[in-house]
Image (cartoon, rainbow, N blue to C red; front, side, top):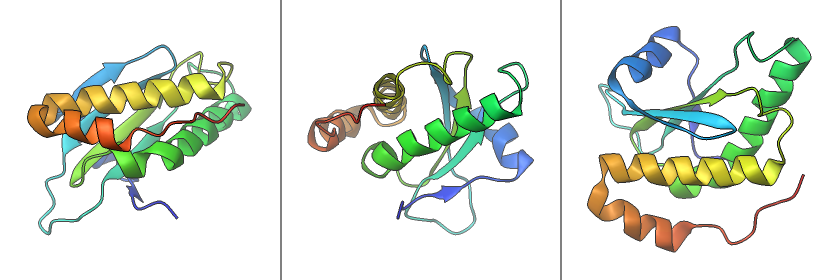
Length: 136
């Protein structure tokens, strides 16, 4: 069971877009911002976005499923606590190999973490990077 919660409110997505950082890769875009909740939580929150530009409903659903699966594999180890993240699907998310999505997510998480916590993110990335990427 993943130790992160899911963003559902539009205001959370808008806050991350306005006040956060983003990293774009070939298969996804990752946005992140510190969580400004009244009570601190010890786990990150994540949201998923797929727009109609990507394709019809079955394509958008496939993209969301693939992003959720990649997040379930790597988010517990690489995401910073008390941060909110948004994964945005791109045109290639539905067709690219799953290992590419996993690699892009790892890269984006490490790059975002370095922006927010430059001294500790390098140690976390070295110690928690999973060795194997599952195939499609």
